[in-house]
Length: 313
Image (cartoon, rainbow, N blue to C red; front, side, top):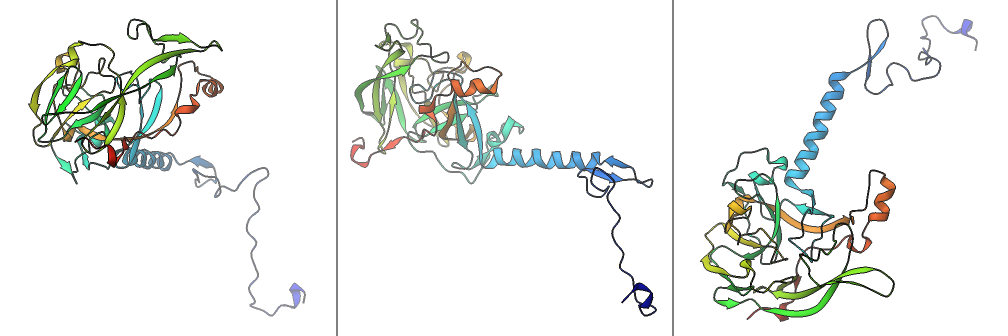
């Protein structure tokens, strides 16, 4: 039937306007609106609102779920190396002021859904008088008595067992140069011409069976002895795995240490695993990151080994 033969009053279909040549219609361009003259303009308020929502989502994730963390020092060797990037979970011990990314909240003693760490957990903590995160290991819980005698932890009157293990041959690189002043006589070169740092290793086993590797190179170091104290309620005692070079609970705040036990309200989360690690040779070119990657470090778990048969007596 032709158009002329349609009954009177029958509505005609209306086709949508054709798009202008070479692009979307004014209604289909993301972030643009049309004014009364049909000109397209950027919706700056909408763009800003979207950016704010995205930043709030990232901040919320970093505050309540997890955040990335970078290892800048050797205080947690051999388990954490300079150049490691890892994930810190925010929820294992509840939340507090230090859980909030960038430490946007004032320091306080409140805790939401509080839970205590376990022996051997690796945690991040904000030291008194500072605003940067330290990363250390939990070696004493609220109510424990702790001392350090000749480099060995004495917990509630009993020495924490330390078992000698085979040395760890750690590859030497820009982030781990095996400086002779810190590691005298430990650097060597293998038959293939690769340099390594031969680190003497002790395996420490806590009362709950959690075990991990530590380094204690210098006999008679000032940090090898610490008088016995009792950890107050709501606090924990933290130490680094590289026992001679860690600014931890044994070191006064005046020397950039933690100055004794730390409140759990200053503990911001638990280290979970290494995502990737770089040896320090990387540059601005992203292609250099592949060459600098320490492939053997990726996805390394940071939870201590737990052997029920090796619980300390």
